[in-house]
Image (tube, rainbow, N blue to C red; front, side, top):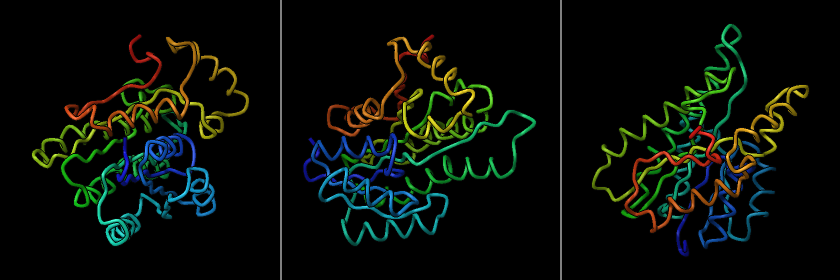
Length: 246
């Protein structure tokens, strides 16, 4: 499906990003993953398979991101698939939100996405696909996740503008918005005394009886990256077990 295609997955050393990178590699793509932890990247690249490249990048640093694309241009020449997955957030209800939390969340989830997409587009040709990992928190943030939800809502609106600005390029940009996905990151997201109750609630919200896996999200991304979705552009695809529909 993706033979001779080159795919970049930011935040690809663990969780959803690693699942996406594995799926694209299994479908034939040559994958480049990014992250901040060199040891984790090396281990993930080995897990994904032979030929996987990795670059240590902090997506909140424009200098880091530009250096990454300079390297990709020299080593690969172009990109066919870009998945802007790197992101994160913390729980902080109003009254406890800090400047550092806002800067970190928007720096990763908004600034990082902006400069990833902006840097990637000159390396892409007609038929290329950009997928941004959003979140159902963009319109239905749980208590304590207002800042995270706001950052993901911003991403959705960036895409609405970008598809008009690059009209005619042949490159498509879409958003995949997962609901809860069982990852190490989600396990550590909740305080220990709240984790069991949180997971029980999330399972109950799903109309398919479970929360997602990285493989679930990876398949949605692979669909949007492929030729079968060639007439799909600018959408937000919710991969959340139907929770956003109730």
